[in-house]
Length: 218
Length: 113
Ligand SMILES: Nc1nc2c(ncn2[C@@H]2O[C@H](COP(=O)(O)OP(=O)(O)OP(=O)(O)O)[C@@H](O)[C@H]2O)c(=O)[nH]1
Ligand SMILES: [Mg+2]
Ligand SMILES: [Zn+2]
Image 1 (cartoon, rainbow over the protein chains, first blue to last red):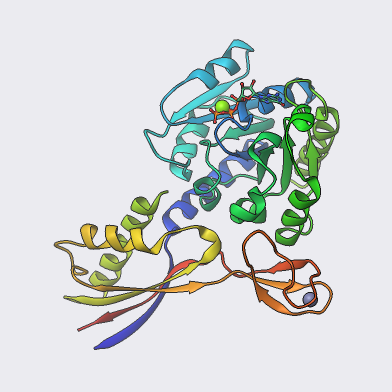
Image 2 (image 1 turned 135 degrees about the horizontal axis):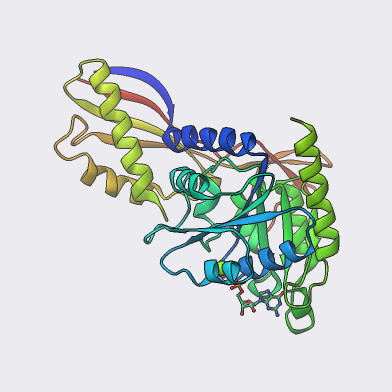
């Protein structure tokens, strides 16, 4: 019996395409944000509100298991959108985003990727994005950082949505934020309600700054 | 979960490495998995047996090295593993900070006849 040491990242095929995506989107001056959260956490509502508040042009890549309901909401508002149907897969991968990027006629702005509603699987797959945004919400409970740590470890922004529901749910903010801080010391927190629009001014300002920095860095 | 697709990648990798070296049979594959990835070794094993049928890896033993996530106490510096629903230090109770461990997912070695 011979043992041969071969160290290889099992996800290297995906990572290579993610790298290519990064090059493509950089050439087109696109800041790409990967939005990850549970089903119904408010990803579509959040993206719509954010775009309302942003002065920078925006487009959307919609990941969905089978439907095009969310993509139609974007198109109705004349937001450039490309739909990816994952056909049952629990996450977007770099290959599908690669095709979406190529068919999206949009440059010089921010592209939001709405990942498949899922707190576990999407966090493991790089898409070539500038950063991941974790979208949690008040109604799903304050223990998510403890149950699904990987997402909060990787996110470069954490947004707590549905804060209009705080009076109706027991949500211990300290417990929630302590959990995230243990996993990720630097990540900024935002609190919003996609229903009322509260908190989006501050978030949009932060994201615009990120975008301008990205443009200057090139 | 997506164990099926990642296991397919793993099997493809083993076959490719075996071909490169002209190996006829792989008897053991060692994989390192970080706790934070959420990947279930049981289902990877299950898919591996199915997907490796009629390949050089058929019948190979799949061995996992599980890497636990580690936290370092901000107060006393103690290194500890999490318990459910707290990332606080079991010694002094202060909050911990994740040490960069537990996100691994790679093939480490293969054994051949
Ligand atoms: N009260 C309240 N409801 C919200 C808020 N944001 C979203 N919702 C509601 O939550 C439900 C789900 O919102 P979506 O935006 O469709 O959520 P999603 O994450 O895109 O859902 P999937 O794409 O199906 O995973 C809808 O009924 C929204 O109206 C909020 O801030 N407050
Ligand atoms: Mg949606
Ligand atoms: Zn301590």
